[in-house]
Length: 229
Image 1 (cartoon, rainbow, N blue to C red):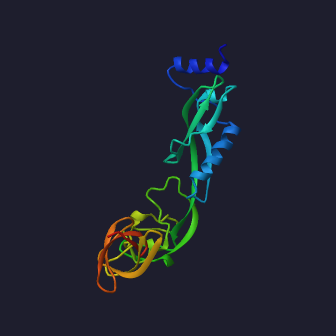
Image 2: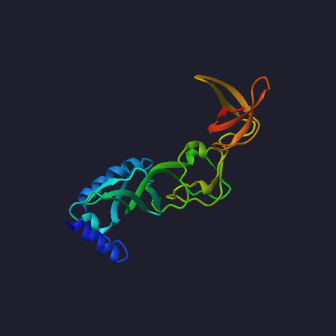
Image 3: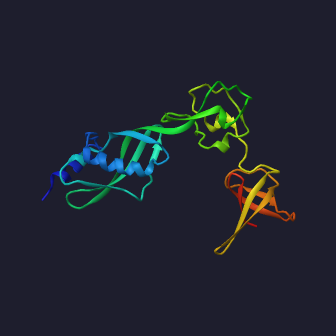
């Protein structure tokens, strides 16, 4: 016996595409909201609405679950939520729901005007939760990215500080003291060392211990390296 759900699917295929359904679907919105809670942890909060979804999802007999095998994609204020869809006959397919997002994040904004070439520090900024949905560039999120940095462009009060606005010092600077550690099985040995080169996250630098033994190390964080050779 042909079900209503099957008929709707066949109509969509004959029409050459999948029509959009009513974006106001409370059950689906709740399911997507729980999913976004786990995917958008980098933000203070978010708002969303379903922008488009296949119309057959509203038909009787259809069930949806999040497709954990597919990644969540975010681009220019839109999120793409992967779903598994089971029809009334138990057949499974996959689709994507588009949601429109408004994203809020705690970011640095200057307390006064900053001109190109000015030296900056965390004291020149305050932390505020701002709408970053349409922000161009990656926001600066850590104090160490601002310490001893130089402004590359004019930064006005209310602007969100992004990484492209400043020349930030490297995580590991040549001649600086770093905390180095080496793993040997379940044992971790750490010691102070001097960096012989600049390095950013995951880059390889050369460091020397107090006996002037030189090692290759991977940059793990601010003034923190892991000996690899």
